[in-house]
Image (cartoon, rainbow, N blue to C red; front, side):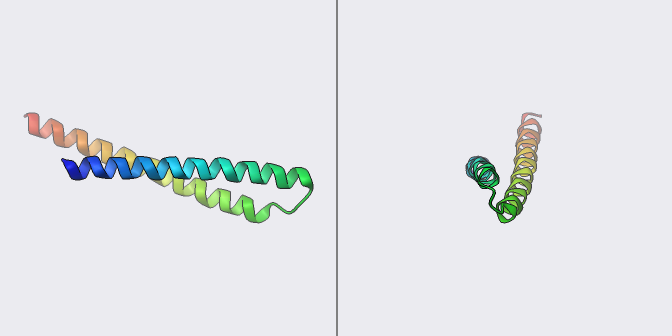
Length: 76
């Protein structure tokens, strides 16, 4: 059970970090675009980090479902 908890905590931390990175990149893209600079590299990085964030959300959901299934199976 501790491993499940540790996995959930690790995923939650990774999600928080990725969300912060996404916000930073959005701000950077907005700033660069406003300055008339090329924001293509920041936009590409934003797409990549956003995709990774989506994958983390999926992973979190799977781990939660497995934990719920495990608890339900133990209760039976």
